[in-house]
Length: 490
Image (cartoon, rainbow, N blue to C red; front, side, top):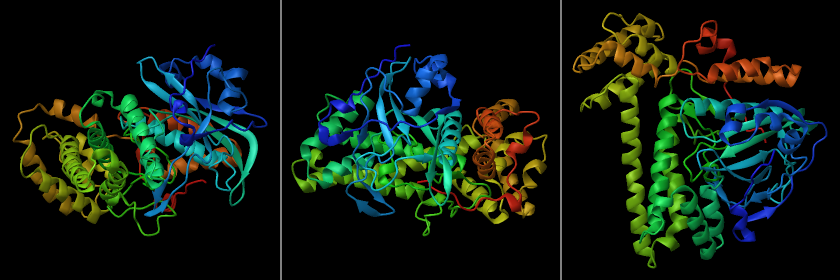
């Protein structure tokens, strides 16, 4: 099979990246190939499973047209600025134009050391590779913009973390791997030419409608702000917590990227944090919208030299653009929660109704995902809400809210079955529960048993559908199953 690789990013000046080949591994073994994604990319799944395809996925050989590079970027990590980070364990093989005409990056994560490894080994352990595969594909099934997992490969080698662990490589697919931190890298060096080249590249690749405008760089800033507002709103609507929203982990394409200590909430609590390194709760669930704005402010600062010749004018333009973020994410979240509650029209009291439910859920320690899913079942007047109220530690408080909700539903002339169907399409039954993900990783790492991984992936590929015999995957963890901390894996 002929793979038509290109690498438009490698046509930028050499200071944008370092040319580096993947480091070959001892005994590559394919764990899983995402055959539907391969076909979407125009790749032959059978070829990818062949020795030649496996060699490419493991980094043991290069395909004609591949131009492997590690990209340079900077970033604010937990608020502190690092002027040089870069791809320390990821190598971009090149780009493929998929069957829909979209240009997609093909990257190997865990493919060996690069000039940006900062004393790291450039490798990935099996556990984090499986976590990213599960989470990123689950997010795609939930219709959240995200990087994708094309393949997971064991290397036949070990990596040293706290202990020796089996090594693995993830083949990641993305619209691109350009980050807010990529702009910061050149801004920190005062490299205005590189900033302009990068901005032009991003416009051409992600926002081509902006080319030719009188203010393309301000329009680019506004487009990225809108994309991030929409993305983070979707996170909030499904209880997703990214866990490490550093500026180097925020894609200018508006995709979820870098699944490290990420997790989904079980019981609703806006202060929920899972990341073991987020000791101050900077990236807690409720902090994600303001942190997204903070990150976008850093992007605006980097773009100031392109916005206007006068500093004061550039700052004013950037501030006006940033002021739209709060309005956009608020509107997206309210509209999303309306859909989750089965509301097709707008009412001034809807925001209070949404807030009241969330407050009741927090006080009652009710499961975020199951509350909304069971409301989908209770949306008919023939139901009495018992399926949902059993989730609350204070069911009487839920009863009071439920009465207000049913009164609000009565204002809309929509058949019950239409409303219920619409609610089931936005309220998932299955999410990647932390205890399920950890159990899958334990089985794979400790016993080389990948059957639990395969079954969990199958369940999560249909998050909105009832799946007889798999109901237990929808349940929150018992007290002894709760996962309180998740880890980066680096």
